[in-house]
Amino acid sequence: MNLNQEELKELASQLSHPKGDNGLIVADKMHETNQNMTVTCYEILEPKRNDALLEIGHGSGKHLSELIKIYNITTYQGIEISKSMHELAKESNAKEINEGKARFELYDGKIIPVSNNNFDKVVTVNTIYFWEKPIELLNEIYRVLKPGGQCAIGYVNADTMKNLPFTAHGFTLYPEQKIKRLCDDSHFESYRINTYNEKVKSNAGEEIDRKFHVLILSK
Image (cartoon, rainbow, N blue to C red):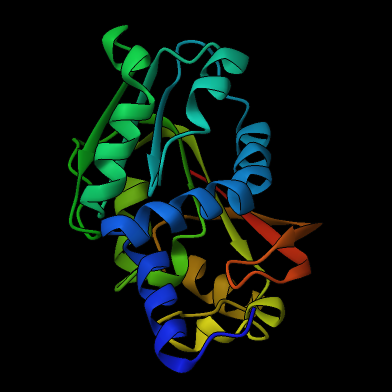
């Protein structure tokens, strides 16, 4: 599928902040392409039954009900900048909300709206490209993690991303050295990077071999 520049800009905008009918279409595609990365982040974190878990940029939230069952999660909070995704996630997880296992909030992409030392685990997938102030947001994650807590950040390899035409519009790419500098400039003192390979259909409709990383940070 060949997209013109205006269509690529629209796709990039929807990937960073889904909205309207097009946002719902993109959300379904993101759910498919992000699923393996999200599951991998959860597998790394291994949330326990009583762990409080925060997900930043949960998108449609259609992955959540199955992961709640697998890990017997009882305390999940999702935060989003997109009102469309916020509403869709609440609709997709009405049962979990009614059971008191999940809650969803909108936020401004800068300040996490919770108190200090609140979560055991934090996860976010394919959001780091859109962080306006990445060091400040990493420090926010540090602030809301409990001592000994962990964060898993999933993101696609920079060399893979730069070959996707829509990433020229508003994406910040993160090669390994840039990630390391970001971590070194944050409050986190302990981190590691795991690397994985998968085959996915891109948001532009092409099947690609995709390398992705998970940055694991410990407080």
